[in-house]
Length: 458
Ligand SMILES: [Fe+2]
Ligand SMILES: [Fe+2]
Picture 1 (cartoon, rainbow, N blue to C red):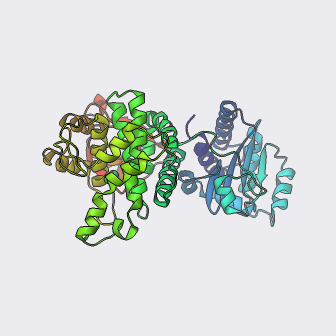
Picture 2 (spheres, rainbow, N blue to C red; picture 1 turned 120 degrees about the horizontal axis):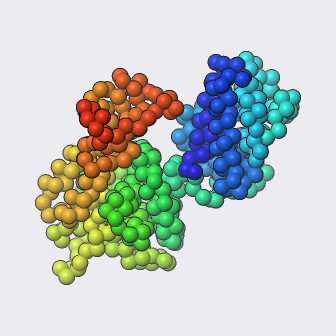
Picture 3 (cartoon, rainbow, N blue to C red; picture 1 turned 90 degrees about the horizontal axis):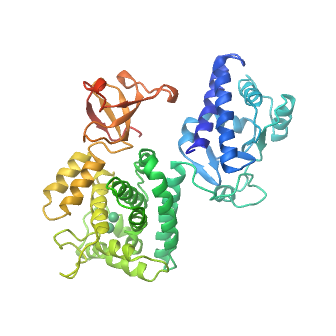
């Protein structure tokens, strides 16, 4: 069910390029059209929807009021066609027929598409007899289109009816943290309850789609890396916690606490927070104050949990009790804070920052293991065995030069289950030609991982 919209966009683009190569009734063209119809039917039935509307605005696909990032790269041709047709997107109607999809492909394969304005595009569809694909109006009000406000320009669907894809999830997490930080910085109310509901979505998706989520999570956010960092820390914590067998209640708590843990940074001026050079003593103290400031902000909010406050206060306190802002000797630390502290450091080490490159996980582990007294030893050991040398979502090169994305870790720290995305010599494979390869299978025993490709997606 996940990612149907993304898949349909990709299949439409692929169908279009195949139609350019082959005739209309070629089995390849047929099979793309059939697959699209099947997926669309799945969508209509499971969502009880009459239409699947895929919007296009400013070179991006928009679905349910939000930008869809992944397919906007792979589905460029469909975006191009939307601009040729002067339209703002396509509405696939319930009852979508294979014939109509193929006629749509026919139009896109025309050498010259005789359309000067949207009315011509609609007339053209009519001439071809296409009844189950609607041409959507162009958005003239960008803001309205992006937030999905009902208005004269928005012809998409209602926003927030459910998270359909990892892109959506990432965006939801990202938006939530950005908004929470913004509210905290302005001294207004932070919607803490939303952290819990966002965390619920995260839990649902991370168990099945951690690799996909981590893909987005890997993109470096240079200008807003505190927000990106919080999303990554929360995702890692939920993933590691679920692998360790924590129950859903604790996973929900750690997800929300992870999203909020650095909220105290929202009150640090950007000149200090993003300063590239050496910090003065005062600036350093301001930064060190963020766990205390964050806990204070959270304590004033409705619906905040004790975990949120404890994790916010304690995420820079070390296992041996040192660190900042300090804690009384009698205080017992919750495992949730201990895991979050580990995720926080691991994320900071393995992510790109304006002042440093990303480190390989094995280097991060060795730094962390050598920092005696810093982390809860049992939880750190469990974390390393769950996240491993090649965490889900990262790309690796194999000894036979194939390239794959880690989809799942296995019992062996260096032998993950992969989706092969690059053939021998690393030549990228079309998504239809990609396949799974589990390095734990006996038949693959000769193949090893030779390199982690940290910047493969860039
Ligand atoms: Fe922090
Ligand atoms: Fe942090």
